[in-house]
Image (cartoon, rainbow, N blue to C red):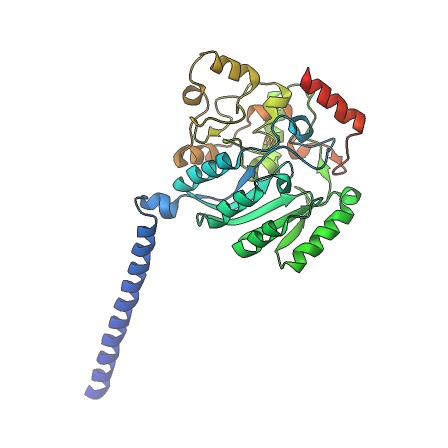
Amino acid sequence: MPNVLQKAYKECQRFKKRCKRYALTLLRIFFNSYHQHSKMPLSRAYLNELSNLVLITGQNCSLKCKNCANFSPYLAKTMPFYPYEEICQDLQAITEECRILHLGIQGGEFFLHPNALQILEYIANNPRIQQVTIATNATIIPKDSLLAIIKQSNKIAVRLSDYGEVNYKSAQKLESVLIAHDISHYTHRYAHGDSQWRDCGGKELTRLKDKVVQKIFEECIFGKYCLSMENGFISRCSRGVIAHLVQGFSLGANDGILVRPNAKRAFATYNAQTYAHYSSGGGDMNKNYLPSFDFPTLKRFLESPAPIEACYYCYGTSGKTIPPGVQLTPEEVKSIANANQS
Ligand code: SF4
């Protein structure tokens, strides 16, 4: 019996030593990793997480969709591509505050961006951005250098939008290229998964009533899952960051957050009226209007979902069902271009 007890005691001691060794190893890994995030408080390094962010890199698109929810045909000429330096600096500012668990990259058409490679290189090398999806209308075969960085990154997938007959052939071609490069990809069938769009409403949509807006917003899938950043402005969806420029309403103070508010940008984030007020010395809009980005501000924005001004001019995902990607006629494209000039 004493022998058995002795054996058990020795076994316990060995187990204790092993546990101590494991605990020390874990602590070492933890502190080494903390050291790599040097000078970063623990909350920023480990706790702050943003589950999803859609990054819009410009409005230029290879298609001219009549019902584009993001008004790309109206903006393609005025804001075709945001400078990649600004895009990367905005992502840097965000990832200094929190990790991004999933980043969706969009255009217009992202593969048209002249600095797509630099953007992808930055994203691939930023360990604080964990998973990435590039949304494409599948009309463009990316260059080999882009395919290579997507593959090497081990964290970027490609999402091909299903535009039915509009992109059927080109999507098949792109898919075969992605398969050949062993790149993870899938076909996107939109918010309701039925390969149909919902009509969010056009440029001319007049302001909806409070009650209607509240219901649309509560049901809006974009508003729940598509937090978006365009030109350094974060808002609830990819329409919310841009609609004011096309539909001509003023942003509200609760409509979003400005990343790097003092940055000199190639394009104004504000609508013409607000921007004119700002540039004529009517107050520092960066400080007094939209709040500046930090993680607690973003968290508060996410945790208190409420319609933004753009929702008053939008049917969200409750609009009527329409086929995806119906193209504007050349005359319609021309008339948009003329209206933009006047
Ligand atoms: S209803 Fe609001 S949140 Fe939904 S898509 Fe329209 S603007 Fe975006």
